[in-house]
Length: 240
Ligand SMILES: *Cc1c(COP(=O)(O)O)cnc(C)c1O
Image 1 (cartoon, protein in one colour):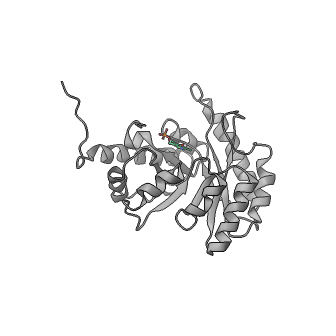
Image 2: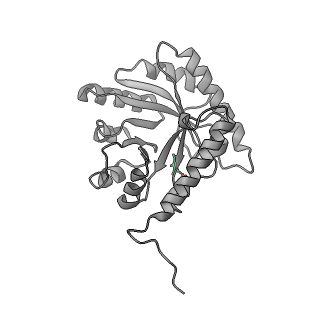
């Protein structure tokens, strides 16, 4: 028996997956006292080829996330970018910043002051602005970069002052957890987000809390996430 592979033109699985995800997002938003449109959907497109990406764009997806600069740039000419916004969501080396300024509208994985300074400097040179989220290493995991939870607010004050940077909030990827213990990490991040929203008012408009991936986006929304980053439950398991 041969496995039925999705062919180039049969993207109906994407229609179905996207419909299910949209419905789950809507339900979780309502459960958290918000409207479905209060939660931004990002399609995470790492390892995904341009044709399926263009298909989800045709379904209404207007924000994609990529981890690697080189991968994004190599796909760019094949993507329908007319209404598309792009964010970097993976660790970004300072020497790659100049390649993405003017192309992506946001970096969600700002994990050091020096990276923020480089983004600021390059955006000043190019006369453009960059939306920035601070990545928080919420589980204090050694393998992950990011600001500490305790230090994030202070760093947010510093970064909010940098020219041509729009500090919008925070992003986190919690440790892999059993059951719904992940919700405690999300709730903690929401505490930081609400605190920053208040304390930074007048300095930055803090309106984005980027939490939740395929396995846990509904829980993340219930704990206050405003942006979910979904890859494999939309496109299928990644093949590296
Ligand atoms: C890969 C990735 C995602 C998407 O993960 P899925 O589990 O496939 O939805 C979201 N955020 C970041 C930072 C990622 O690297």
